Image 1 (tube, rainbow, N blue to C red):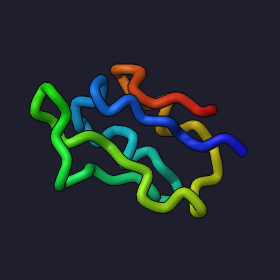
Image 2 (cartoon, helix red, strand yellow; image 1 turned 45 degrees about the vertical axis):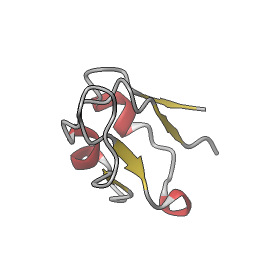
Image 3 (cartoon, helix red, strand yellow; image 1 turned 60 degrees about the vertical axis):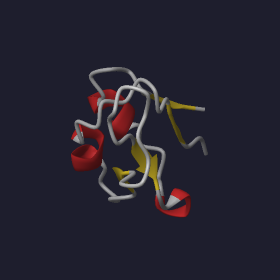
Image 4 (cartoon, rainbow, N blue to C red; image 1 turned 180 degrees about the vertical axis):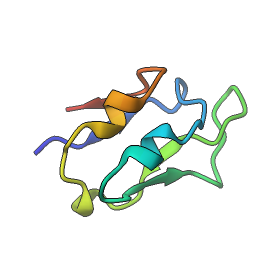
Length: 67
């Protein structure tokens, strides 16, 4: 199964993907900032991900893809 790949530089930390995730395996990386000053999304539990692509569907900046 493919897992979400997050483009850290494109992410603006809006948390729409976090809210859309049915398994709640996404969160904002509190210790990381991208070059724009945003806390990007991170997949903290890859084993819990069911590859549903809801995160990628909800991302307004197309910062998440499934590979």
